[in-house]
Image 1 (tube, each protein chain N blue to C red):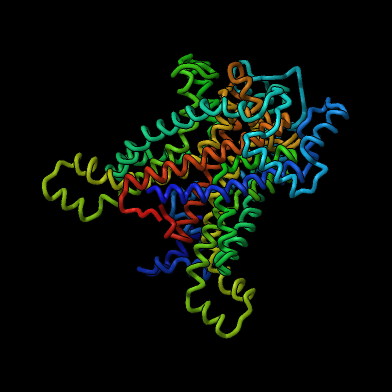
Image 2 (image 1 turned 135 degrees about the horizontal axis):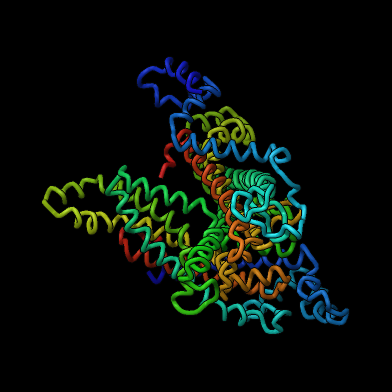
Length: 305
Length: 310
């Protein structure tokens, strides 16, 4: 296990180098970084100073080296909008986004596991059709539109939940549902098909023939194997969940990393954009590693290769 | 339609169902139509997509107003069929007094152009990279797949945000940005397919008789990858339409005078408490379109590549 983790951590390095290259090329080569990083009101002196500071008169490979050196030390430049170093600003927002992503994941699991099992057990009945219909709809609806509709019905008309912002549990409900509904739809379909496959296997027939109660056969014998693909999809979906926070946070004015990044992009605050991209990438890679480890613990048949 | 399908169904012999992919090629459009009508969701999907395509094509005839025309006196008017509705505005007006129906009609063009355009770009990039990786193997494969891993490690929308932050929004940029960031699924599937196809006898035979690499790839391998390529494209058009709407919602996608459903939603979000119709109808338009594409895509998958059925 230790070897596996060490190997995965080593594999992070080329991925991070590639991401740094993408960001570096985008910011330095495709545009004038000085113009991108400074507000429009900047004076010629500011420009000259920043050009010097970023080492833009140096050859490109030296610039990239400097960029990496700074990045490793956590220096992504100073945000002109907040007039503070970018990295602490970004890290400060991370807990809010993490809270939202986890809540969405929990919501998706709470909905999808029972719905998926139910629709597999009651295959081709009305309730199966109903659940399948809902999961297709969940996939087709843009989640930000669903967020707006939830605000309309549950905040504006019925006044059950607050419209926006971060606070207690009641603030978390609508954003978490909005973010989690697509994932719930996907997981429901997956659990349904994986349960259907497992329920037709020999060991399930054996369990049934031994006279075990159907609820135990489904809930214990089948479910254990049926959930393996769910863990797989969870690890894959965490990335897109973090991507989804960008939009959900904008809809609900949730003070997370996504909202910071979107506003930074709109105001050309490149220091924040760089720092946020790095933090999100590292975070996503670490989360994927974590789910990989959990996955292997759950299913000893999978090898640590 | 019923008549045409019944005449050809008389020719159907019992037990020929599994020959259908070949039959599609032989009997052409009428047979495809008959196959389509056999699937309820496929029929619904095709009908929805057809409607959206027709709306996009005949937008100038269907729109009752100029979609960009600002009319401050008639701002935020409810749909005409409501009590206090403004006559002539079927779905009401937005915060600048623009007619929502006409904007939805023109917005369908952007949705389809971006949806199909971006999928063509990402499909081309992904197919070429996947082919190269599988066919040449070794370091080419390693390099391409590591780049693909890096692309997967970052949420796609994040990558798009960074690119759009630098190059600025717009229809053309959007197609290329979505195309350049979404190729990984194609590359992976095409690579997997090619890896198995290149071990098959007919490819080995082609190589043995001395065919050039380009001929082996284009004549022998590519045609066999086509059906999975079409299947992924169906799914990708749906996600791309939502992506375009999302980016436009964030203010980074389509810029005026082009109309995007996502952009309409972002206008409507601020007025949701007082004027529900501004944000409701564009969302319905997106959902219905994507639903149609998903249904049609699922049907295509079942017909072309039943192995991919979840």
